[in-house]
Image (cartoon, rainbow, N blue to C red):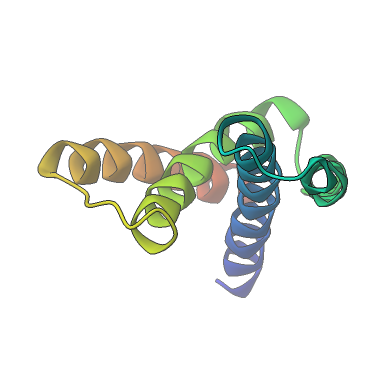
Length: 111
């Protein structure tokens, strides 16, 4: 169970690196932020790409499973950072996607 939790944590950290990098670019582009925001954005997106290389199984499956974790993390970002609210469709859709990602991660971890 611990290895699965480590992989799940790595997925979340990877998703946060991607979201933060994109969010900083958005702040620069849409919110008239400083161009200096592009420096930490580039670092965050480079970290995202590097973190993807740390996952333990074939890249195609990793990207598919990562997508599910990304959606769940993005929904958490919506609530915690953007001060948004989830509705039942968000919860249902995000839950189904997250469950599918966990099936792929756990199922292939054991094979």
